[in-house]
Image (cartoon, rainbow, N blue to C red; front, side):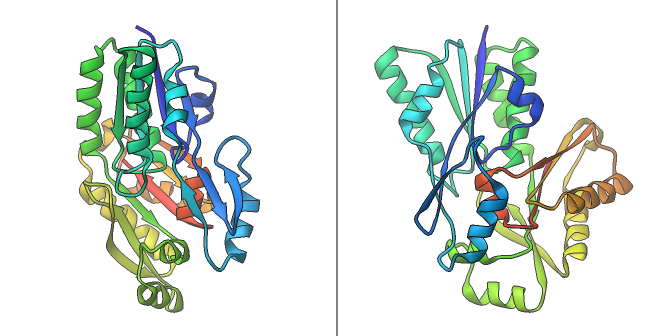
Length: 279
């Protein structure tokens, strides 16, 4: 059976995924002081980060329309899967679900399933790859859905940000907490809850120590490392991603460690210098 995997643009696609006809992105839109920026192949990270630094209000994002998802589902594939960033962080999941209903109203019944990643960024990337793994193994549509939902429940998302300003400006962090962290060079080690919201795990003085703590927190929570793929995304700081990879390799052996640069929405939240890790 043919299949398509639709990932909202918060999920980074590797170069292999971009050239693989089974994957496509549905773009969110970013807004910095009234300037609309589409999160697709035209996204210019350097220009976006400059605009964010100069903005007093901070960037915002809007989820894809249900019609955008509906059009992505209209692809000729027998099985269609959508992967969205956490429902706790965006309306993308609800939009994707509504898009499936609109598709069936116009075109009739089709096997479409929308996954709430309960993560973001390369968490969505890993989920997309897992869907493909199950499809290529010959699993039925129902089996792919069940196995992928089990996989989503097993993943953990961690991140350390250079600056908390975007989270503060978007109302996801108190002004006092952001001020103290930025003033004292305290870098919180953050993670996603099992529901997909944001929580603080730890903190450290300075980025290097925070990244080291993030790695140790991940190792403590991860079982069966040698059979898992670990993904790292970074916002304009490849050297930090390589540092994290080196720290991981000192402590555990993973099936694969992949590194990607953040796309638009992930760049908005990670901000310049942020590092995200999902396993």
